[in-house]
Amino acid sequence: MSDTPISDSTPHNPADLGMLCRKLERELNAANEMFRKLNIHALNLTDRIRRLEEGGDEAICALEYAARVRIWTEAKEAKP
Image: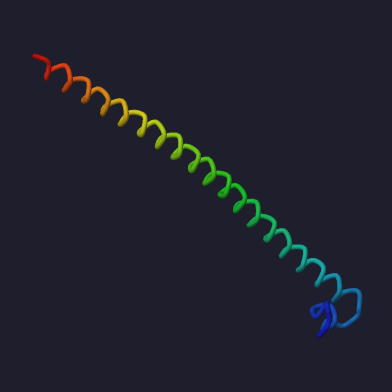
């Protein structure tokens, strides 16, 4: 099998090769646009993951603080 099956199957005249080049360029531009959108989407997901991690850290700190306040309150109320 050839490395270039499309160009091997195209007759070797300038008009057909020019049409093939234009078709391949359009396909390349479409693929680059899809890659750009996927890259932006990946950056957005990475940012969202970072925000969720930070929010989770804050929630854990809030829960730990609430538990310590509860322990303190119970200890204070238990004194005679």
